[in-house]
Image 1 (cartoon, rainbow, N blue to C red):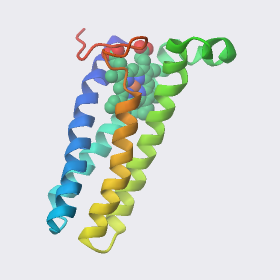
Image 2 (image 1 turned 30 degrees about the vertical axis):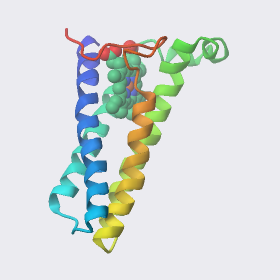
Image 3 (image 1 turned 30 degrees about the horizontal axis):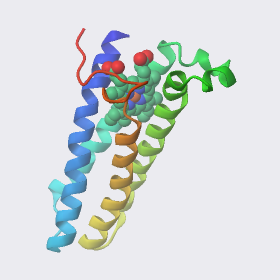
Image 4 (image 1 turned 180 degrees about the horizontal axis):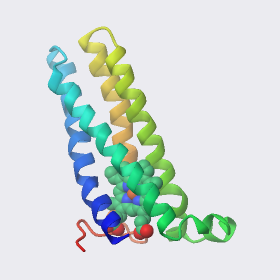
Length: 152
Ligand code: HEM
């Protein structure tokens, strides 16, 4: 349980690194009107792999912790912002981001020209990154605050 939390905490940095890299490369590619390179594809691949790992570990935490049981008394728990965040908001928003990353990678692959690849990349991965930033329990968030880094 603690191991899952440590990995989930650390993997957030991996996801953010490749998410930001993907978005920055899309903006750069669009403004320089350059070709879409294999390294552009690799950046969003690592973003996607990170999200897949986060989803699996997140589901583990959801069931191993008592968040899953909280669904039984949903009405009562929705009134408490801390329980509402970890029972619904965090997982649900991250799930939407995960779907966007997957659709994004498939549609970037399918797009014909480099410019349309960068445009699709910016839209899908950009929105996913924003959702991730909004739904992360940052230490500066008053009620749902969690540490920047965690160790055993
Ligand atoms: C995709 C589906 C996801 C699910 C179902 C999920 C689920 C969870 C759950 C249940 C917790 C609370 C753990 C506990 O205290 O018992 C948690 C914490 C956390 N999640 Fe997620 N998560 C997901 C994705 C993500 C993603 C994509 C990120 C960031 C990139 C992320 C970042 C975090 C962080 C930073 C914490 C706090 C960790 C700590 O306390 O050290 N999660 N997540």
